[in-house]
Amino acid sequence: MSVPLILVPCGSGVATSMTVAEKLRSMCERRGLQVRVETTDFKGLQGVAKSARLIVSIAAYEKLDYGVPVVSGIPFLTGVGIDQAMDQIEAILKR
Amino acid sequence: MTALDVIKYIIDLGPAVFLPLVMFIIGLGLGLRPAKAFSAALTLGVAFSGIGLVIGFMFGAVGPAGQAFIERTGVSLTALDTGWTPAAAISWAWPYAVLMFPLQIAINLIMLAFGWTQTLNVDMWNVWHKAFYGALLLIMTGNLWVSFVVAAILVVMELKSADYTQRQVHKLTGIPGISVPHIMLLDIAYLAPINRLLDYIPGLDKVNVTPENLRARLGFLGENHVLGFIIGGLIALIGGKDVKTILATAITAGTALLLLPMVAKLFMQALAPVSEAATDFMKSRFKGKTFYIGLDWPVLAGNPTLWSAAIVLIPVIFGLALILPGNALLPFGSILLIEATIPVAVMVGGDLVRTIILGAVNAATKLYVATFFASAFTTLARDAGTAIPPEVQATSWLGLSSWGYVYHQFAAIFSGNFMGIIAVAVGVVLYWYYRGAMKKKEAELGQELAPATGD
Image (cartoon, each protein chain N blue to C red):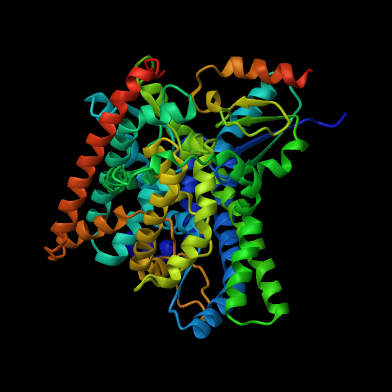
């Protein structure tokens, strides 16, 4: 089975998404979850969303349907609720 | 040889060589392993070289097309809009840029300790804006300490602005406990009175357009490569180039706009050790206290209004650039001008019609601001080692904040130009109005939202 992809979008795929992705990578490693984490931007997200198992978005409240589950990325920036977010991600990955 | 000579020699090596050296020392100072510090430092040099490469590639294609455009139309749009990535690159190339980290952190901690702000800014990426305006003003006025004063003022204004808009951000995102201390939002200060005037237009608020459909249908136009293809091709087309050249220009332009953020990622990678250390430091200092966590603007990006309005504004901005007298900016790299729509969307709470109208006003202002700073921007870009071909007379960035102009007038006072006091006075009055207008809005929202508490 191929390694599942997690997409992290932000404004340009440069700053915020990189911060979230870094944190996400190390958290996944700590839990022994094999994933690929890639950053992208919101403008291009619709085009590539389907290739991902899930999206970790700092704007998870948006109404656009990407066809894959979306988990909030805010905990990875603020540190609040990060374990719950990881539980959620783990549950989706093991589905 | 004195120590000063040594420093001068090192700086003269150019930012692609000089900054990795600085970065390596900082990395070691932060306790990184030498191998990791070396890798991060080298990444910074690579980022500079890489971004220079892509900018040169972009100029090579869009430059001649732009010149043909000027000759054929007779409209003198001599400054090519490069977008934000080169702006960030030339900011990091400023020898004093790294000092903006401690400056921002110190001011934020002091303001929190005295209760002058409720925002703890953990967004270390946008430190580059302070370096950007500092560097621009140093080129224009030659006064280093004024550059630092302006950078400090910008830090304070961003934090206050984040406080003013906190509930509005909460309402738009549904996320409690965060705020957005981004320079973009400062534009609300002068847009708020204009927004008030719009209240007098009967029926304006009855127009009901939902931004979601627009974004879902036309969103692809905002993708970097598509946008570059269209605008690059359009410039060549108006320039009267043959079909082959038009298509070649369009593809190259699309390539450049897609590659630029990819290369800019390297800056973030290289600066990660510094920004992580800074963020951890910030968080650890105020554990257990209540405040809002200041984040970068993309937390707002789930709001469809800012994208839809920016897409609608693409042809508008192009048209404005052509007809506004005195404008010299040829919009290209940042023609999807979210810098114009985001502050409005925050101010009006996502109302699409108002965001389009005020976004157009904001874009028009920004054309003039970008024109004003074109010469200094071009000098900075050259100093940073960017190869600018003769077809490109000047460059600038459409996303420049209107406050840049006020800061320049402020700096000019210290060079004996007392007319600058007028712009500064207007700026202060507008900022005060901003505070009042948002306070009213925030009080209304306070009833609506559950009490917003931070970590």
